[in-house]
Image (cartoon, rainbow, N blue to C red; front, side, top):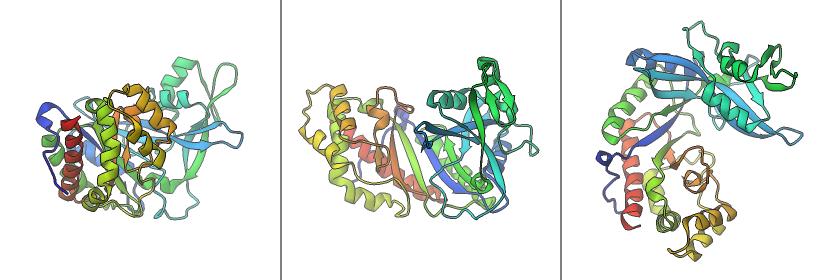
Length: 335
């Protein structure tokens, strides 16, 4: 594959990385969060990560909120360490439980993720759900804590406690803030070196996800090229990106998505093409997730490269990332 100029970080382009790791037995993702905060002279905040886990038996959405730590450096977000439900293969059977929260309201789950947090006092802070972290929920909705969770003033449930295996606390996805290449390389090396020194490993099904700003691709020509060029070059791209064959939720674009892109012309309105791709079955569980580009109200307005393998080798990851950047630069240069 011919590798051209990567995206120019000097012009302000940044990339956000998600690194999937696994704590050794007896440790949790919070151990890495504490070490990261200590190394950077920062602070920790206990927070929650919203995971959509399908539907409850009666058809309502199953929204789970798992304990998360945010690392703040000089008062600004540096990274988060969160659970990742796709990491399961190396978790040991155990009777020990971890308490998380559950709600059937997608909007409430997203609101809690953004607004509910608490000061992380230290190692004695419980890893499971901490009622103090729901102070914003109590204040905003006049919620009351009961044995099973929180209810509104009329006694209707807002969130309910739910137990999962304590092994889930070993799963550690490090979500780094978006960084330009000059800052990304040393940051990635420091994070992975620290994780390795603490005994963290790469799960057998792990991947690294890279998020790029979707704004430069918000045109019909660029969107068409993303779909068609990736489809055409996919074999050669995967050869250099080296995706983990055990990683879940990867694959090519659905055939109908490719057909929509082939049939579209450059004078077609961007919104029309985006709607057509969604109707054609575009989804996130592919090599190149474009939902942040085509959805009207995306949770993350990014293009997500999902097919980088999990690794503790920062230089190998940076090399693969350069190939992905070069592909995206080719798209924008001719769009």
